[in-house]
Every structure is written in C-alpha cells, then in structure tokens.
Image (cartoon, rainbow, N blue to C red):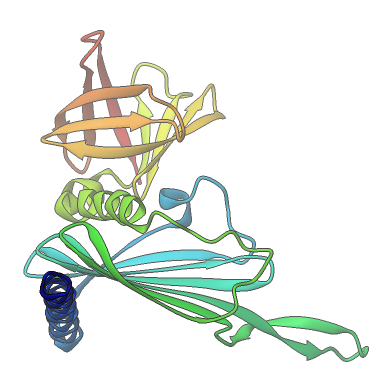
Length: 264
C-alpha cells in the first residue's frame, strides 16, 4: 500500500512539474508577443503574390514582414480563396517561431440590385480560429475556436511554412539595395531582342521579344540564384557589375558573361 502511495505521489509531482513548466513557457511567449506588439517603428517588407505563391489566389494575396533591429518579428499572410480570406499571423523571437494565429474568415453575403445574393469580399467574419504556441521548435499548446470550413484544407506544418516564408522575406530584406538596383528592364547588349525584367524577386525572361519564362530569385553573397518553382534546378550568376546603366552577370557553371543595359 505504501509503495502504491509513493508511486501515486511521484506521478502527481511529475505531471504537476510538467504543467508548471508549460505555464511558464506560455507566459514567456505571451510576454514576448506583447513586446513585439509594442514596437512602433517597424521596417515593413512585403512579398508579391508571385513571390510566395505557386498558383494565384482567387481574390488576391499578400504577405508582409515586420522588422525591428534588423530581425523579423512578425509576419502576416492573407490569401483570398473562393469563399473566405485565410489570415495567418506569425510571431518570431530570436529568429524562432513562437506563435501562429490562423483564421478562416468567410465573406458576408450581400444582395445586388437585381436581387441576386453574392459575396461581399470587403466584409468577413471569423468562423474558425486556431492558436499555436511554440518553444524551441516544438508545439506546446494549441487552442481552437469555431468550426473549420469543409472546402478549405487545413494547414498542418506551420513550422516548415514559417521557415520557408521567413527565408524569402529575409532574402529580400537583407539584399534590399541589390534588389532595388535590379528592378526594371534590362536589354541583352549582344541581342537587344532578348531582355530580362525584374519585378520584386521575380525574373522574367524574354527571347526575340517574346515572353519565355519566369524564375524566382534569391541573392547569396553577391550571387544571383534563379530557379523555377517546384524545380530542383538552380542557375547561379555572379553579379560582376550592377549600377544604374549596366548589369554584368557571369554564369558560374559555363563561365559565360552576360552584359545588359538598363532601359529607362
């Protein structure tokens, strides 16, 4: 009997300790979120839909990153589906994901002049919401409110997604001067019917005056990496020269040099 009582007390103490540790984690996370929300001088950077989506949304999309002291603190993504806006907010502390708030916000219906019912994309309400708390890359708490919409697939791996989007934003933020200089149209000097256009972090290629393809880009220590979405191939070019008039790239595989002239 004494042995069973000892085991019972030991287990109770163990679970009580775990519960206290979890409460301390949640308190720390909430304190960190409060500090982040108190910032008033964020550097705001954004990604265009083409930069973070593999296919276009039905009713627009946006992703904004909020930087303080050169570090991403908060990220807000909004994607307009056929029936609802999906709004997801991510919080980061020391470059680690600490909190995710996910909302499904269906469009309210309105009556047109002809009496037909149709969605008003400017007016929504929160039908379903989940809150996730993370510590050291592990989920420690999940809170769920409302009922999820059947026609919308719930996201599961927010850690992986947050890491991917943070990498995209950080790449654009830390290389903002280079990306700013790249924006616009550049003619290939050896054949002016060939040219490239940079919009955000997207590179559009034109051959003989016709659109050929579009590639996503990232910059790594002076190297421009171009790649197709959902493709493992990466084309790497050393940025040899970049100013208001000339862009010179060297293919790191073939060693071929490409010189472009800026078009005003």
